[in-house]
Length: 141
Ligand SMILES: C[S@@+](CC[C@H](N)C(=O)[O-])C[C@H]1O[C@@H](n2cnc3c(N)ncnc32)[C@H](O)[C@@H]1O
Image (cartoon, rainbow, N blue to C red):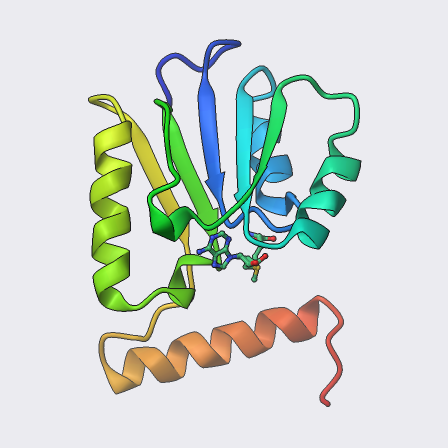
């Protein structure tokens, strides 16, 4: 992911941030950026607060990004495994909102589970996924 500027003024929004895992991964690439984490579950966000304890560049908001609560301007919007909770109409509205808060050249990254565009691709994705989770130590069960 390329961002301009990729420095201390860079603002990144994480939608459905959960415990802050994606933020921590993106932070390894943009260590000077500021992050705003929106998350529906206060309990999940508490874990993120623990993860970034004492870090002034991380701010937190309990709320639903799907009901028009997104404000501000960001250089990048990131999200992982969250937007699939929305119905397609709500996804479209959200994508419009994201487009409106990003400047020209801004970046939106949505890491998601998607259905393969053909049955053969779907089968291949499932095979790859199974291979990878087993390699990470998941049991057969
Ligand atoms: C599977 S978790 C992924 C968490 C995190 N993105 C990660 O990759 O570790 C999905 C998260 O999205 C949050 N979520 C789902 N819909 C949301 C919404 N409309 N607004 C805010 N958070 C939402 C859930 O509460 C949950 O914590």
